[in-house]
Image (tube, rainbow, N blue to C red):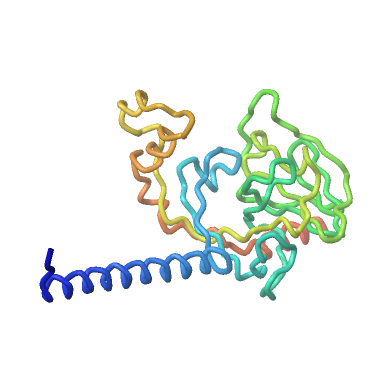
Length: 246
């Protein structure tokens, strides 16, 4: 069977277009992976341990530049701008499960932390914490802890929702090499409890499809979008410590 010259040209053109599109997609994927690995990564909040700072259904961006991005599979990092400090909200690899967790840094290496009736003390001085909330959860609350010295190279992490947070009070300090990055802004938020009723009929196993859809189909919290999370609390901490100085 003969194939016309025009048909051959059309076939070549289609193959050429397909190849160009595939190349463009591949380049876009490589760029996206590079940005995700070394600059910014998106995360969502699945639990209430950081309420009211972070709510279930919040979507946030994590900055990997401040502390220096970590090379995958190693403890090597690019040079960062500074080390994690008290008040930073950090995403990190949980030392028990290696899953991504998010908590606030409360103490750094070299300090001694103690909790007395939900009041944090650093080196014996009370810490002012405007972000802290106390919601009683039976069987989880841990109102007293320590005193405990935080070793160099580690961080003491706690959830803002103090009585509903499995944190360093339970699994001790976090190795600084486990830090992924610093949360800095909310780009989307939805109330999952306001999702359409028909979602209850959607199977949630083996893939958590119902939970994923509820995040996108829940009622948007427009006022939370754009909330800045990378706040500097150093002046608040200094004022609190100064008030206790003789």
